[in-house]
Length: 260
Image 1 (cartoon, one colour):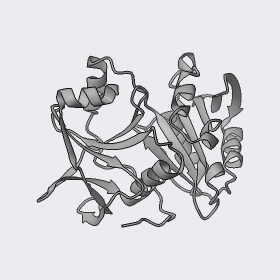
Image 2 (cartoon, one colour):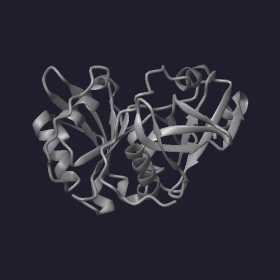
Image 3 (spheres, helix red, strand yellow):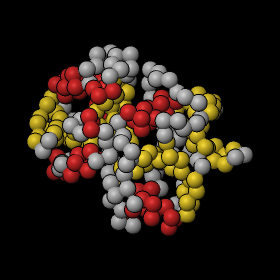
């Protein structure tokens, strides 16, 4: 089943309150990973040009952490037009200021100027939204919700493993069906992930949906532009899609896969 491009706001994942089962595993096995990675996209009704509608931002939670290694590494897994569209940033909420890392140089912007820079870089029109950022979110996530409006969608990529080129989307809620476990995803998030796979990642990269209950057995699905899904409504969540997890790995197999 093909998904047409639709202008749907991505919902926050209501079932995502459980602490990550993957992050401790990375640390125990000395697997280098990155997180706080956001893909921002100008919605299709405002800009349909693939080379200009996407940006990737890596949020550094302190200015001391800012370095270019991530920007250089992730570029190896992106299509050529995205290589200069990966930025690092640190937000100082008290001063409402942003330190931006681009091509090895740092620049400082006010929140208002940073908003204008992002919209201009994506050739995107601003459309006001009343959304407010969660207190539990990172500063950049709050900035997106409060400043960028409805013309921009934001996809938070849970983890990136540079050694293997895997982008991991950890799911904390599954539906037990006759044919095996299925992850439940908001329709907007699902469409965004498929667009990322098709539009900006090169063949070396993979997006994996992952669920584990106990960090011993891992259920996976590699996402492609043709991944099949079912429309489904779950009480307490609403309308979304379910995707069958068609691969099962035990602990050692999973670690080996991540190491590449």
